[in-house]
Amino acid sequence: MSKFAPVVLFAYNRPSHLRQTIEALKKNELASESELFIFSDGGKNENDWDKVKEVRKYLQTVSGFKKIKIFESESNKGLANSVIDGVTKIVNQYGNIIVLEDDMITSKYFLRYMNDALELYENNDQAACISGYVYSIKKLPETFFIKGSDCWGWATWSRAWDIFEPDGVKLLNEIRPKHLEKEFNFNDSYPYVQMLEDQTNKKNDSWAIRWYASVFLKNKLCLYPGGSFVHNIGNDSSGVHCSCENRLDADLVRAYNKIKKIPAKENEKCRKSFEIFLRDDDNKWSFIKKERQGNKRIVTILGKLKFSYERPVKELAYGFSGDYSSWGEVKKLCGGYEEENIFKATLSSTLKVKNGEAVFERDSFIFDKIQYSCGLLASLMKVAIENGNTLNVLDFGGALGSHYFQNKEFLRPVKIKKWTVVEQEHYVKVGKKKIADGILDFAYSIDDVEDANVLIASGVVQYLEKPYEWLEKFINKGVPYIIFDRTAFSLENRDRLTLQRVYPEIYEASYPAWFLDKQKFLDTMRSKYEMIVDFSDSIDVIKEVPSEYKGFLFKSRKEQ
Image 1 (cartoon, rainbow, N blue to C red):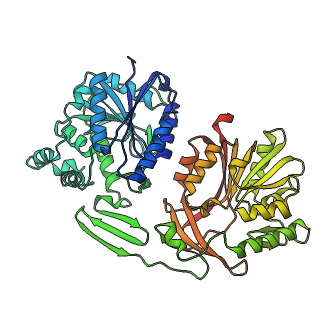
Image 2: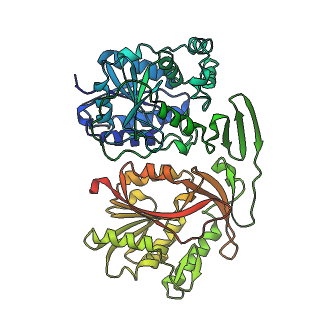
Image 3: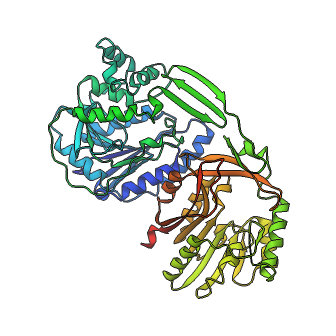
């Protein structure tokens, strides 16, 4: 048996989140000395089962731990039952346990901190829980105790888990007669009592609120770190129990010195800091919860009074407008990038550039001078320098070679072995026939391009129906470098889907366009790539949509 606590991970139907969680955990100092137990819940429906099967296929490839055991449920138990059953099974066998869910990115020091804390307080009956996560609050002590428990990357002992009460009604019936509601709610800064009541009424299925109440009622304590060892990437509405809330994001600790033992008593100053954080005027979830469903807004006040309203969409003659819930909803209102007139305009402009009749084209629009992207060009130069002054480019969504014609003169000192554009079928057919020149070529799929040392995705990701699935395809392609340029990001900390109407002097067209959640984008890429540099694009910010255009150079961790 390992001298280190077993790590238990609960997974459902989010393969991308799970992959990031496990990749981060593998980088922990104690990963190779720790046993990992993974509980994979079954799907609720056919669509969920497809994702569950994808999760389970990935789990068979996981390595890097002392021991790995996977438990696959044949039916959907739900997160609460999965956690309760799984924790009980493992903690009773080992005596202690470290618990993660499939959306927790951990610092490389997470396991070290957890094991140190479990050992320090093993025989201290007042300590019931170790939390790896803490709110982003300045000037917290190295460690401190607060009454109760937590649930984002946590640990406990069998002696403490024994006090867990799964019956929410019993817990409520103990809180109310003792008039503990205000304290339980952190001085009424967060509606925990309402959460517990909702659990008893089957409005939620939270095991965590029952764990918190169980520990709270026994006057037991949770140890918190001064800086977070856990960052939750599930606050993107992808999880069953999550909604978008970027205020809970945390910067992971970058260094760790073994923690010192402190008296097991509540730190009143830190409790007050939690209360202030939860009551912050910018954080309305104490009293008002707002949910977005396309143009519909659902408002819940104090967990009880609920109403909804339609937010009117400002439709513009040209440019970006709207806030839509699905790609299909936008497609009913517009065309797409596959429209014939877009292709004809692009072909005409590209042939003029190739034949020397024009200097530069972008999106079929002719310019009298080349509009360089300094970030893209500098990134290409860096890749070339690190690859013997050579480039083999996979240009995803590169139309009929606009990036090639844009940059080839500047890159003349570099040996370009191949510049392959991956595009729609009609672009590829005409490109091979009329545009290819021996270096510039065209392909139908990224799988058809071999030996590329850099993948370019410029101004394209936001026009894909499922952008994050495409990011995963880029990642799995394994190209050493990936450059993103002219990529649109929302400043609202969420993905926003709009309708873009192109100005008629370019061509008559309209299509769906995303403004992506930058943190979600970066979290996806960082699963296997390191960001080398980011750069701003010179494109004007769209005033109707709080946004920015950014570029990034990523390097595969395999190349380091």
